[in-house]
Image (cartoon, rainbow, N blue to C red; front, side):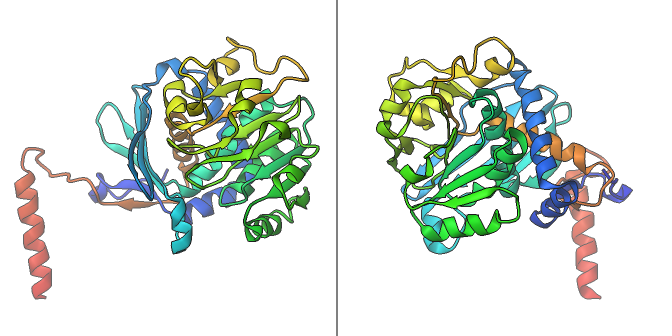
Length: 358
């Protein structure tokens, strides 16, 4: 990472939307997704070293605003993120986010970054990491139900990490499906636009649901799901928002990130408090089995967890080393005498007034 000028020692590296695009385009999106998956896997394998808590959520009739913190006692990270499905009517993103990565020893932020794009990438990387471990061997067909902002990232991650060759697209809004098909046209995938969810899942070994509506929806019903598939349910991410009929869960082996959060926000909020689930990190660590048979239905009830954001920010900080894909923000007061904050204020105020006179 390039060093700030000495006079700006308290300035914090910041990655804007433009620089996030520049950095990830320079690396290449498939490589970014693969490397992000590796960082997430590495941090999941040291799961027990992290502080963990369900995200802090402020709900309103229109949506939710959340803080997602975690720490490995060396670094601390948090993400600010919202979920407002009604924003589509305002021509606004339904999800926006930014994040901070800090030094536990000093409490000083080491990095700030946009995380709307970065979250889409880390979510896609997590989905593909899970599918690589839980989906049937040699899965080649992905059904993607919900073709909004994350759909292309999800597809490219599945292609890159899992070897998907065909994607079957469906959204209740045909224009979203047309958008996704257009954006994926140059990927080398076979792209099929479908008129119904039932049509989309035909022949698919991996089914991903990624819808935005904040409601207890039934995107998939029990009679639609045959044996031997893997489902990534990533759209349910707050209380009162689900995508799957509860009978599907009863027939599936369900894997989650962090049970205390998933039971509040995930598909399993529909189920009794003692409904059995497996934490995915335990599969990676070899403590619990993943897919056990060809006929098994595996279901990843993903709501997104703070350790994934920690991994993404850690990856970003490593990739910034020696590049110019960042700028510096003057957001930390740093007086010459740490006890003389007022003196710093006085000097800056005087200098500002003098410039105004000139």
